[in-house]
Amino acid sequence: MIRYAGNYRCLDGSFFRIAIKTRKDNKILISELKKIYRIYRIKREG
Image (cartoon, rainbow, N blue to C red; front, side, top):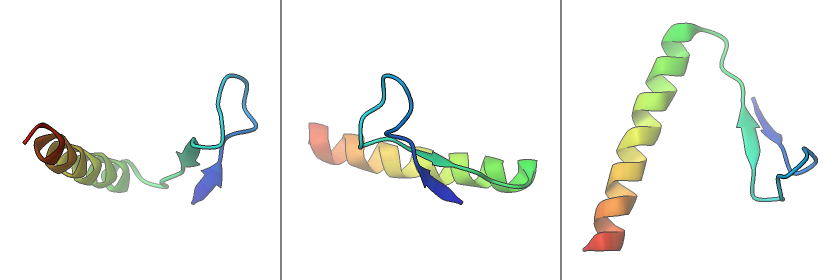
């Protein structure tokens, strides 16, 4: 589930929350997000 988090104190409309049911799925999500971040960082620095 992806949920808007801009209504939380100190967060603006660019923030969101992600809910994952299992620890295994959570680890997969984190791994994939790290891959995306690495690609973004390489492109930005390149």
